Image (cartoon, rainbow, N blue to C red; front, top):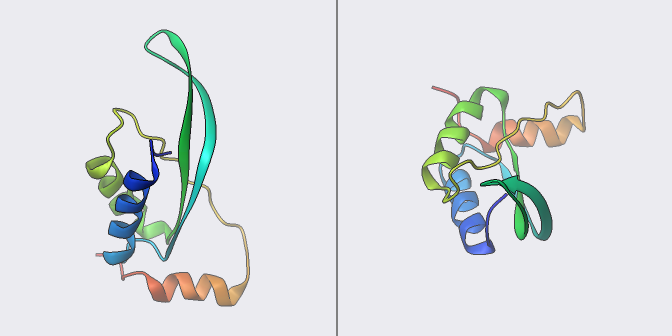
Length: 99
């Protein structure tokens, strides 16, 4: 989650330019209700979905942590058990080879 589209676009563009993600979906106007600083908060945020390869997860995480303004940004990994072979190949071809 990002606080606004400007931040989400900045992080997403960085990930694409550096080939650590093949695609980033930005979904604005996500309402988040959560505990923080001993109170319940309700904020409008932007959900960011990064499509990448497993071997680039640590590099992507590092980039997000460096660029994100939140003290504790939401970073979770969701594995892919399958999918369109051509789409999965495109992700692989659109991202760099891990170092």
